[in-house]
Image 1 (cartoon, one colour):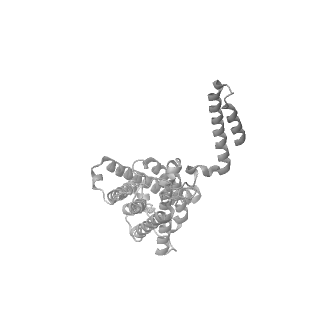
Image 2: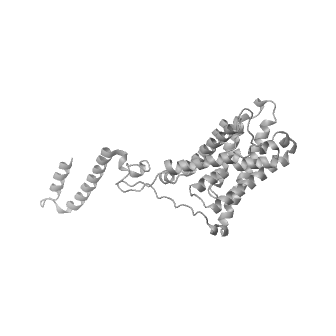
Image 3: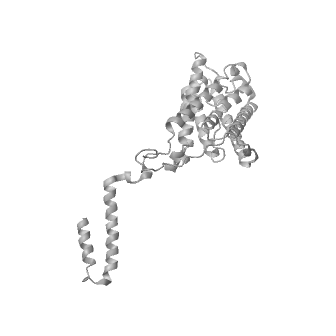
Length: 322
C-alpha cells in the first residue's frame, strides 16, 4: 500500500506532469494517506490507542500519564466557613432532608406494626423500600447543596477521608440529629397513642440476638453503605464517566434498601445514628435506650473501616509509568 502511494506521489511531482494539478493532487493524496494510516493504526492497536477509555490507574495508559487530578484534601479545621452562607445553607439542607427521612420512614414502620395481618401491609420489604427510596430521593435533592449525607456515619467516614473539615462535619451531625428529632416528633404529634403503643419506630435489639450480634450487624451494614458512598462519588470515576455523579443516588439508596432487608430482623436496622437517636428520644422508653450505644458505636466503626478500605485499597493513586 505504501509503495503505491510512493509511485503515485513521484508521478504527480515529476517535471513533465502539469503543474496546475500538482498542488491539489498532492494535498488530496496526503489526506487520503493520513486517513488510511489512521485506520491501519486502529486495526493494529485497537481501543488501547485511546488512553481515556482504559481502566483508571492501570499500565494501559500512556507513559508518564496521570489518570485524573486528585482533589485537594479538605482542611482539618476551617473557621472561615462559619462566615459563609453556603455553610449554613448546607446545614439547613441536611436538617430538612433528615427531618423528611424520619417522618416518612417512622410512619411506614408504625403503619406496618399496627396491622395484625402482615399480608395487608407493605411488610419488611416495604419498610426497606421506604428507607432506601427516601435516601435515593433525598441524596438526589441535596447532593449539590450539602453532599447529601443525611447520616452522621456517612459524614464521619467522609471526614476521616479528608473530604470535609471538622467544622463542617460537626455542624452536619448536629443538624442531622436535630432534623431526626423533629421528624420523629411530628409523627408522634400526628398519632401520639399509636406512636407510644407501637414503639415509635425506635431501634431495639431483637429477642434471640446478643449485643455482639447487633453490633456486628450495624458495623457491616454501615460498611456496605459508606463503601457504596465512596465508590459512587469517587473522583477518578467521575473524571472518566460523566454519568457516574448523576447516578450516584441510585446505588446509595439501593445499598440502604438491601442492608435493611438483611438486618431489620436483628436490630430494626440503624446504620444511621441520627435516625436511631431521633426515634429513641421522642419515644423515650427504657427499651429504646438500653442498646442505644450499639447504634452509635457500630455505625461509626463501620464508617471508619469503609473509609480506611477505600483510601488504602480502592482509591486509585494517579498512575505514573516508569
